[in-house]
Image (cartoon, rainbow over all chains, first blue to last red; front, side, top):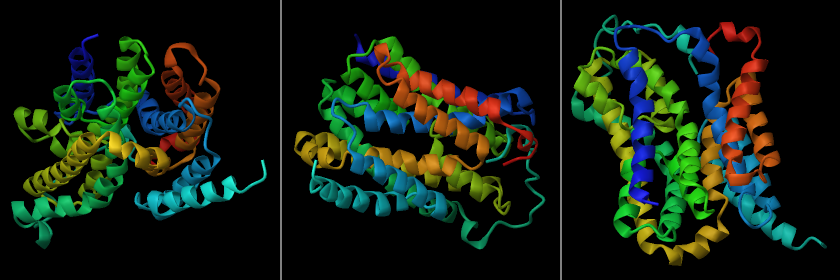
Length: 106
Length: 255
């Protein structure tokens, strides 16, 4: 397969998604209510699906320490509204839990 | 998050002078760059992961370097690379990446009233960098209502330039260092999901978004073994459907 075609297809498609509303809503027009709900839900649904796919999608089984760390990172950002707390909480959690789980009798 | 139907064309000139720190183009650019910095730093783990994946993806070096600016969206770039590595059919790769990016339509709709008075050519340019981080930072700032048209453009340009500059630069460094970073990136495989879960936490602000996220996550686990790696697509669409179905009376107010 030609990778250029694939990359350009994604790039052009994404640009059309980006520019669509800037053009469509130019004259003070608004989007109908029918589009309101699904569009608001795309970000949470797509991001959640991608996070899970990243965690469980690999060849290896899920690392429980990473799974807990991601949940902790989520809660930290939820509370603080600061994206950097995903790392300040999640990375230490992943490392410490990784060590702890390694010492659990299995 | 503002409901689309609630978006009024903002009353732009009703506010007098812009904030002092936004008096000139330069200060506006700096303010945008400053405000987006936490987001830009938060993207670094993701771009490093992408860079390492690029270095092992079998793309030519020109393709690997160009893929960032061509796709210009980290989450879908990462998804595309992983699906390609799994040997997924190109059409499924394209469809999955674009489904991930449909959320950007919402961001475009949120920006539209603020840029409604720009010329067509300017709007075509402004569309290029729209992405989660710019939406979260710029819309929040614009809604304070103290920026005039020029200050908004400067703020937006500063935020976009700094965000994408950091993103591409770190991606290229990781691509160059490549295989040697694999050990580190392997040990810290949690970085990319953390970068995305941070955005997820910002995006889930009420019950319907929470249901959509939870449903999509559950579906992604259940649908993992689906053929052709379509689980991402199925989970995202299922989450949207279930979230829409659950949305109750609070749909009437902007959230």
